[in-house]
Image (cartoon, rainbow, N blue to C red; front, top):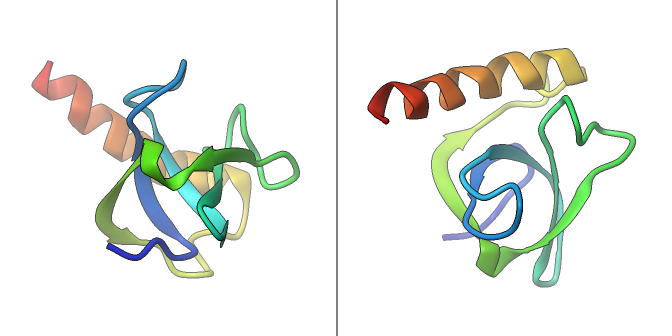
Length: 85
């Protein structure tokens, strides 16, 4: 699956394993991801694509307007995961 800007992804490796992020941009085999809290638009995290699992959700530009909007959107994903555990 092709990674694109605005795609919601889940981390498969690292200390943030299992957390959801939004792809800010993709360069070669690296994605810059944000979560609106620890990693905001000013300080995105670099992560290899092989360590990310894509979802079918892609946010539009309007939903990615501010860090608080991203955090709110991702909280629904994180709460769904917690309900299964």
